[in-house]
Image (tube, rainbow over all chains, first blue to last red; front, top):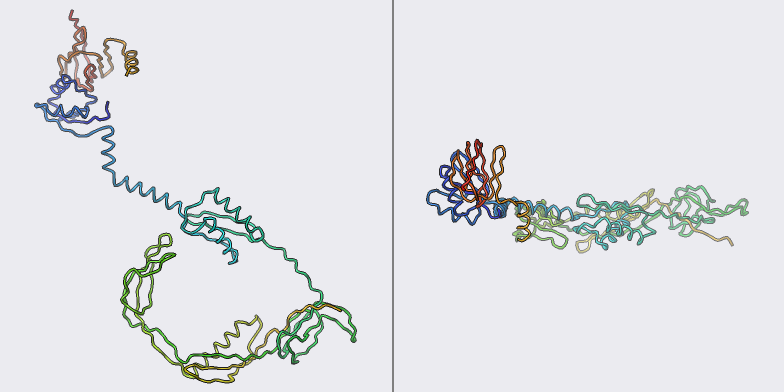
Length: 377
Length: 82
């Protein structure tokens, strides 16, 4: 009955006449409110047209009720309601999107294995969040997949990130104990120092040895009689000689900023990394400043500095020094902990077609001994 | 509609009735309004004339056969037309 009701306002002085007229016309009045000046009445919406025709009183509509009122309120607050709805949807969306997967373990191999396995099972960057049951299933399946590698695995959800903690399965490696072995030379050289706790020395300091020579024997003898067999252990440091050939170009290029700069925008994600505006500088170096980063889609403000390539030449001394440094650092990359360079010397240098070819002699003190098993006949 | 009518006839099984509360008077099934003033209201009932006298009478609800009046009732008079 009141679904399509409305409130009207009339002059309070005319209320008696108005009410009698309403009664005569069978217009129901559901509620009244009075103030000093006005009388407010709640009537049916369709009766409004009838009361508006009353000549003796001025009728003013001042509000609706029921469904119309609800519609009016919703329309009035439409911006707030829309923002609220969008906010709720966004909140729901953001709380169900995972932006990163972080596997915590010291070994890169294990991290890679777990990451790939998780990726196959749908736990990846910028993906929909898995439910607790799904995560439990994935955990179990990964552990079943790598029973020898993984002891334990935990997938934790922290905000918008998966934190995966892994425990490696420790293998009980029973190393077969060697019972009979020599320490033999792995390179030609001159013995400089010997440290050993088992075995019998077959060489002395300053002895020259060839590759394969026994340095410390596993056969213990006394008065030329064999007394026992052990696995010799120890370190034999010897002087070893190397000849290294290095080629160094006499000319090189450097980039120098001209002072001219331009601004640009760069967009980057997994598949795309390009400037958004046309670059007006041909050769440049750029400095990036991140503006916004949403799910791996990153926008940068870029400052481009124009650069020009300048060609320069080394002097012979500079080229030689560079060649020496390159040669030595290349050799040092193969060094053990206790290895050291004893001497270095340039054997030959020649400049051909803007390239300097250098031959360097290097004397190195390094561990030349290695274990070798033997079988007693 | 049949159910509604049945319930209504069960609840309102009288031809008319007049309810009086401390500040309200409810009259059901009146026929006409004879007088409507702030201090006096006369209603035509099916078989008699109902006169209410008092102060600050105000109509709260009004339909074709029902009226709810707010005010201080001082006297109530029933005048049988027969």
